[in-house]
Length: 450
Image (tube, rainbow, N blue to C red):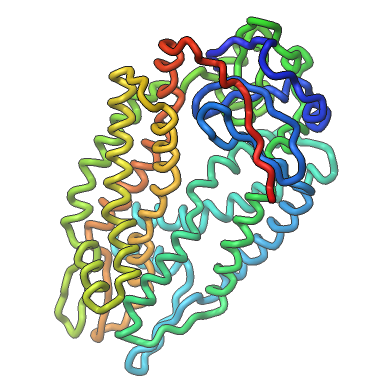
């Protein structure tokens, strides 16, 4: 639930935005990063609204949003089917040719007994992306025909849930690193699926950028009593998913405990048990971090002689062979980024526990950084998956995943959950209580696209 009280002497409600959304109260928005209640200014095509206090992006106005998003989603589904139906890489070594599909590495990991790791790779590289595209299609098609089904809000809510877990861009980086590693050993042949996969990355990114969430949620009916704009000084509730701002008195107590009147998400002022859950997840990730960097991540068997390698030794190998760009990428993504993310989360947790009021905006930016960079640490897991799938040359050479891969995947996944569990609005709570001028920046700034 939103903790601030609504006051009418802030910026005036822009009538144009209220008309565009079909609901005057939708001109109100509560920033999900700092908790500031503010009004949206009217937007022109390509414009964006940022929070006046922490500079978080709140809304974008995308022209012709539904048509563009639907067309790109249909194209994405076609490319997804092609990318998963044909081989995407082949390796030629001493007359032997090995082909691999996107799921070949998953199958090999499962056969090696690493079923949990294979499940993580399958979900993040294939399943999450497929579900996201199908859900988008199910949501956007009814919107074009105007009627909205009963389960529509739940489906659209799950689209946002799946977005951070679809990591095909990270998988593409893993393909590039794998090709560089194998270039001196064998001939790598790109196949049909690889080209479809590359195009799919850009198509999905364009579909996500084209979808205006405001337009989607404005089609979902809500009770008239909830749509009523809050009165001066009246406590409000703000949904963290669909961003519906409503008078607290108009929310049914039973409904408030179970979900938002529009999207069904649970209403709460702050994420439940945020600090405790984040601490537990961060500690678990730290415990997994040491074995993730000390144990072998791959075991290469060449002519019957096994040789193990860690993430750091892999980066050293690339650097010693003059391939410093991929070596730097591997070292940054696999060693520095997970460590940096854990250090930042610990710093944010300690600062909240100490009730620090220093530089809350900078701390909010640090939190956003943990959300953006954490997923890229999966690149080494994808490299292992691709190498395991490609290098299956019998007695000549084989590559197996080492125990480090399990611990490293655990670090990445647990750290992502830790970032999701942390509530950045806690950074601003103490600042609001101690700063007499809190609330004077209750405005939104507009970015106009060139």
